[in-house]
Length: 329
Image (cartoon, rainbow, N blue to C red; front, side):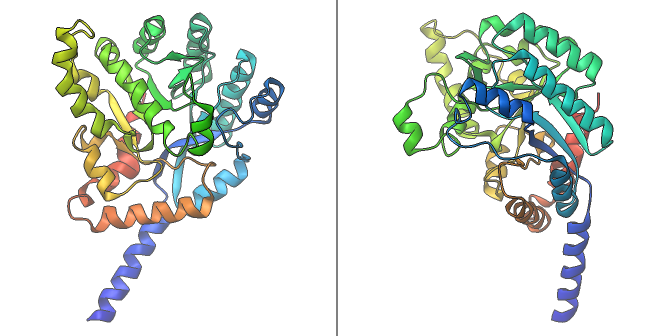
């Protein structure tokens, strides 16, 4: 009996490993032009760590080995100052999508904080390049998501029903000593993501622009803890004219969450306290994590999504179906 169970387990595990239908909504493109621009600006270490090398063939090799059918490409941090470099990166991502059908999608970067230039780039990327969405930094030079000056940009994106992928960038301002002792990716990226999303919620950005869909990275950062606290404090803040009315349901309904980083059954269960199963997505963070580590992490996710009774019904949605529906325009 034990041998039969062992054989069945091997067959199931092998079948899972060979499945090529995973959609990875969190991967980055790092072009030579992007690196050169950051070098000229003296900003290669802006985020506190060196940028990894990127090669499309290595990316495809890892996808094949891990069983990832499609990866969504976004520009890495930091945000380059040059609008021309951002345009070049978007055009490169569009070319990779054309050259490798069904293997790549991309969300275009925008030259913020220049709002009108960002609107022009968004229209070009979505309408001409065929971008699958837009990537927005949590802040650019202190211009945080949720800032009033970004409303015109969100209005344009709302007209097109855009998918927006968020990614944390260095906060502004940042404490240099703390940054050295606790690298941004270790903790502050989670705070930065939570800060930006909270700012959007308190200004009802996603309620006012209801066709937008926003992907929050890294297992939702601190939002499973922050949202209940925000809701409990909102009446006090409103009584003191610090915030206005907040449409919690409409704002939260627009948020999706990728599981890049420290995913676990516990992390998924916490996210389910603020969202629904159809808003959970697989993300890798390639190429910031070694391919072997990403493969092991995806295999571990497959195992607990198969064998945890409460999570097993969510497996196909997290690994493929939810992202497929999200990016169908």
